[in-house]
Length: 433
Ligand SMILES: [Zn+2]
Image (cartoon, rainbow, N blue to C red):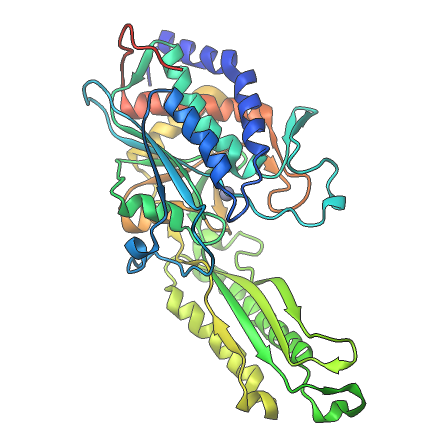
C-alpha cells in the first residue's frame, strides 16, 4: 500500500472529484450505446482519455483478425460502429507492474419504455442512486477507472508502470471487443474490470453460448389445420425440452463446487421469439433466440452438442419435423467460463485496497453471466479481477448504481493502481486535463 499520507491524499482526491465523476457518468449514460450505436459514447470516452494525456488508440473490431482465435464468437451484424478505445499511460520509468483497466461501453436494449419509472437515457440521481440504462452495467465502472487515475494525479503521483485504459464494445453479445484488444497486442501483468458486483470480487464465471433455433412447419388454411404442421407450437415443444436440459445441467452443480451454492447457475434463456404471418394460417416458421450458460471447464462444443441433441429429439417425435428438422445457428457468444485462482498477487493487492476503504474484508461471488475477464484468464494467462459497485435492475427496468458504493469502489481501484503499479511523481510542468 502507498504510505499513509499518500493514501489519505488519494482518498481525498476521489471525494473532491466525485461530483464531477457522477456528472460525467450521467453524460455517458445519455449516449444510447446499444449494439450498433456505440460510437458516440466511445467518442466521449476517447476525448476524456485524450484530455488526460493518455496515448490514444481507436480501432474498429477487425473480424478477420480474430476469426481464427479460439475465443472468437460468430458475428451476425455489421461492425461499422463497433469501435474500441484504448488510452495508454506510459510512466517515465517502469518500476511497477503493468495493468489493464477494462470496461465495456455497450448496453442492452431497454424493453417497453412504459415500464421504466424514468426514461432510460435521461439519467438522474434519486435517493443516492444514479438511474439509467448502463448506469450500473457498466458505465459507472468504466468512468471509475478514469477517475481512479485522476485521483493519483491530484495527489501528485502517477502509476510507475504502463496502464492501458480500455473502453470496449461487444461485451453483451460476443466478447469480441475485449478479444480484439488482446489480438491487437494489449497485455499486462493484471487486469481489473469494474463490472457491477456489489463491492465483491468474482471468483468464477460461467461460459455463455448464444443460439438461434429456426423451426419450419407446413402452412395450411386453418380450415384444414390437420394437414398442416404448426411451427410455433413445435417451437414451444423445443422450449420445453430446453427447460429439461437446463434442469439436468443445474442438477450437476454439485460436481462444480464453486457453483454448488448458487441457486441456479445454469439458465437457458429463451430471450426472443418471432414467427408466423397470419392469425388464420397455420404458421410455417418460428425462430427463437436463446442463451445458455456452461460451467467453467465445459468446452463450448460439448454444450452445443447437447443443445443440438435436444432439438433433434423433439424433431424425431414428429413425422413432419423428423424430415424437416429445425436448424440451430450460433450467432453470438461461444465463450467458456473461468475460475480466478486463489492467492494471486493481484488479488492480494485488491484485498488490501478494499480493506483500507471499506474497513471490511473483500468478499467473493460467483457470476452466472458472461464476463470479458475470460479473455484475459483463458487466452493471456492474466489474472483478471472483476470488481465493481452495487447496482440494481441491470438488464431489466429502472437500472441504477448506488453512489456511496461507487465512491468507495473508485477509492479501492485508485489504491489498487497505486499499489500494483507503484507510483512516481507527476512531472512538473506537464499540464493534463
Ligand atoms: Zn457488463
